[in-house]
Structures are given as C-alpha cells and as structure tokens.
Image 1 (cartoon, rainbow, N blue to C red):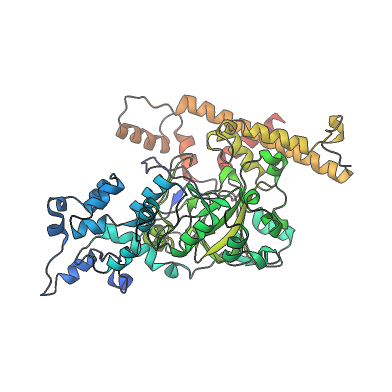
Image 2: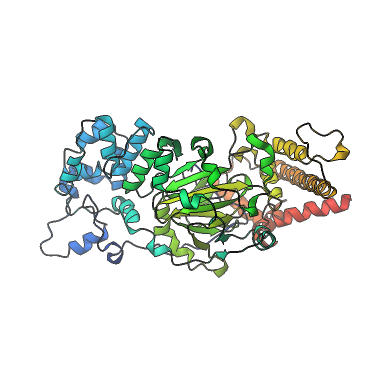
Length: 571
C-alpha cells in the first residue's frame, strides 16, 4: 500500500462524522525513558539540565558560551537556518565551535543533501548520511576519521529536546508498543467465512496460513535478493536505488525513519519473482483486473529495516488490500473509517493528510492516548503480522505499519463485490483524488473502469460478442454477469443522485459572503449546526452521527437513506 505524500500542516477543520480520540498527556522523556541512552554527539534532553544543575560542580550549559549571540535563537530557528545552507557552508560553520560542530553533524540534514544532489546514485558509508555525502563527493575522503574523532568531539552539558527527540525515537525502538494484539487471527479460513465474517462487515484479520506455502517463503531473503537481482533498480520513497545499495544502507542506517523500499514495478525489474507468490484465494475477485494493463497501480514489493514503515493513511481509490510478510514482522495499528487517529489531521474531503514526521514520533507522542480513550470502543485494533501471515485491510480503514525488524513483504490492492460501490463512488465523486494512473487519466478513470467492467461481463443478449472473449458461457455464468451489471447500474443511479444533491446543496447553501471575518464564518457554521438558518437541520443531522456507523462506509447513512427512499418513490 503506497505511502502518501503529506502536505504542509494546515488548520482546516475536520470532516463531519469523524470523532477524535481525546489526546491525553503525551509521554515525557523522563530519566526512566532515557537511562542508558547516549546521543553520539553528547546531546542530552532538557530535563537532564535540571538534574545536572543541582550538582555543586556543574560548570553550566555550554550552549551560550559556544554559540555567542546565536544563543538568543531557539534551537528550532537555528536548525531552520542550517537547513538553508549549502554543504560547504555547513562544513565551514561546523569548524567554528563545538556546539555548531555538533549541530551541523545532525544526520537528517545530510540525508536531504545526499538525496537532492545524488538522487539514488550513492553508496552507504559507515553509519551516517554525512559520511555517505562526503565520500560520494570526494572518493578519496577518509570516512574512518569521522568515527575516530566522534568521541573526542562530543559536546558536554548541551541540552535540547528538539535535537534529542529524533535520536530518542530511533533508540527506544518499538518494545514499549508491541504488547497489545487484538486483531483477529485465523487459520483454515474458508472463502465464505472470510467474506461473511471479515470482508463484508469490513473487519481486519490476520490470516496465519495465508502465504506459508509460497515458494517465496523458502527463497526470499537479503542474501537471495542480492544474489539474484543485485543491480535491479527499485523505488525507495523518492529515489531509485540498486538492490545492492539499498541493502547496504538498510544494514547500517540509524535513521529515525529509514528509507522504505516500496516498488510497484518489481515484477518487471526482478525477473521470475512473481513465480514465487500467488494471489490468495480470498482476494482473487478483483474487478480492476478487467482493465488489464490499464488498471491503477496495485501491487508492491516492500522492503525495509526496523523502524521503517508507512504513516497513517487510507488505501487509494477506496480499495481493500492484503499484505503478506515473507521475512521479519510488522506492527499494525488500525482505526475504522470514522475515527481519525490522534495526531493526524485532514481537510473535509480527506484529500490532504497531515501527520507526525515519523512513525516513531507518533508512537512516542500519541500511542499512550489511544489506550485509554473516553469511549472504550474507540480503542484501535493492533497486531503483529509475522512470517507467512497475511493482513487483510478493509477499505477506508486508517492504518500505520512499522517494521519490527528487517522485513520483506508484498502487498496488493483490489476491488471485489464487497467494496465495488465504495470504489465507484470514489472514482465518480472524488476524481481529483484518484491515484495510481497518469494525471490525464484521473478525471476519466470511472468511465474507463465502467467500459472494461461491462466488456468483461458481456452476455449473449447484447449481440455479437467481442473477438477477445471466446469463453463458452454456462447459464450460471450468464446469470452472474447479468447480476454484476445490474449491481453496477444500481450503484451508479445512487451515486448520480448523491452527486446531484451535493451539487444543489453546495450552490445554494454553502456559499459564505467573502466579507465575513474568520470568526463570523465560524459563528455562522456553529449556528448552522444548531439548526439555525435554511440548512441548519441538515448540517446538524450530518454532524451528529445519529444514523449510526456502518463498516460499509461509502455513504453517509442519512444521505444514502434519502436517496434510496427517492428510488423507491420513483419505482
């Protein structure tokens, strides 16, 4: 499941009918948490200053004397300034004082610089991006000097939560967050049981024997990949890297949020790899497959070290997904469609999602609040998917995934009978959010999908069949195809009426005079929700959630009921 590009934080209000779990006080970096954690540059959390300052021999913090006039700036401002500098300027500035030496060595800056300058054409050096950048810039550079001088150049009595946070998140690992496992685990699950108990109601499940028989289970490993496809170029977030370079990086990185290899073209780039896996029987009904090579992106090879993973997102185009772990293990945390995870923000139509910079930051700052929500039913589903197991991700569920150790997996998104209506609605009503195809195809993907769907479900009464379809149809198959087409047309009628109703409401009720201030607009919105104004009752009904929540979430329950009532009247 692809990782979404996150926009800059915004102050837009949240979608109606979404409830937010109350955020309890986030965990603090206490002595208990950081005992034994020593930053490679000697940086300590701010809380340590108060303990150290109580000692009679404490010489004072080194920040002021080392930074001079710059010490008037906050750590955040200093880092913002450093992020604007070129590599040569950073190296020069780092030679002026011990604190600036430490600040200009923070690896996130050098990660950005390395990727900006060299894209994926770099070879990992030691355990830092700085060493990698310098070696790539000058092959004669002796990176051993970095390790030799590290201890001597450590800062003493420098305290900063801002600078300690990323190290803390990476060093503490996932151990505090793996004890809860409340996602169903099943083996020997029949297809009908899967549909009735999980796919139809939209409930996650870990299928424990889902991939254990795959040839990949006996073959795939770091060593096998390096031996078989060492020069295969695969996508790792924003860069293309060779298999050899990526695994060298994954072995040595200490990043808080390591690069995550997430490649959609692995079937073409790694010859024969698709023969080692198969689509599980539970997911073989896939209507997007009717589009052949024109279908949206749907299958990815996923490789990453511990701490790598995907931040909170919903899968694209209202599809469902399955994720099979071949080596390693993955921690999953999932919220149903109507509950926005703490620390995650969206605009009204969820076209923009903002969340913490890294998974480890989210777990450090927000995980505790999810364990004691005001409503116990708001507690997320959590689980660990291990080797040979498959996670089923229902359409619309918010989920984040983090690798607990070095991990190789494969994932695929699909559209079946149980989420066809939701995908149709998404493609029809949210054309600007369609993904997995070229930009010029997004607006018309619904029509492309419809054409392929009806062509694949040809029946004799439609006349001469396509030369591409030489199948001799049984009566049972003809009936099934007719039912699928009827289902499509029924869904389409409902979606068209919803689109019409939204358009009418938007044109007459949602217009706000441009001269109103922000606070006047906010007051107007509050009055509407109380039932004041022409459309107040409708807004109040929508925001109250009185219609209840259904895992078949594609339509707001009140809106869907209105449309269905209109259909009954027409009939």
